[in-house]
Image (cartoon, rainbow, N blue to C red; front, side, top):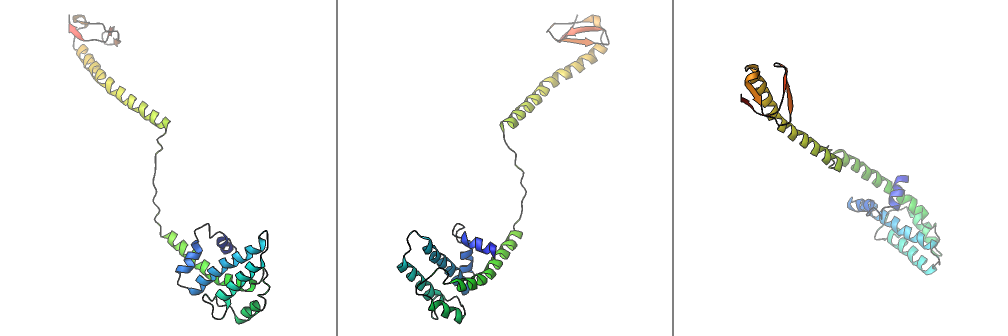
Length: 207
């Protein structure tokens, strides 16, 4: 009951979600009941204005009774006859608690509508397919890391042909007398353990 009362008080901010459910349910009593409750709140607010206006209070109380409680009411909420009679006898002058007995009846009626709405929401939520999706944050640090990885990968590609050449050079030197070859200096020194000398990286040519 408490949850429903809070929902009713905030229903105007929620786009009248509960009121719309009652209207679309096909249940005439629910539709009339939720309309009665909102009109009753407007009636209650009249007692908290800076200036109390008796004429407006009388007009609003008679409107509520004629619309929802009178025997030929267009939006009859179905209260018992003794409640109708009691309220009618106290209509003039109107007071804040005039419709309390009718409000208690209508809140009990609306509780079944609230229960049905929340249950249908739970069932609808249970049918929703949950899809897990992983997303990657393109931050500045991430882009910097990507650039470093690309730079490292491209560096390996530049080094690879040189490594292949060194392997080929080592194979050639194993089968060649070191004294019959000389190295044209380029500033990069390499050590050849099989002939006990060091050389600068360059192209070997016969001496």
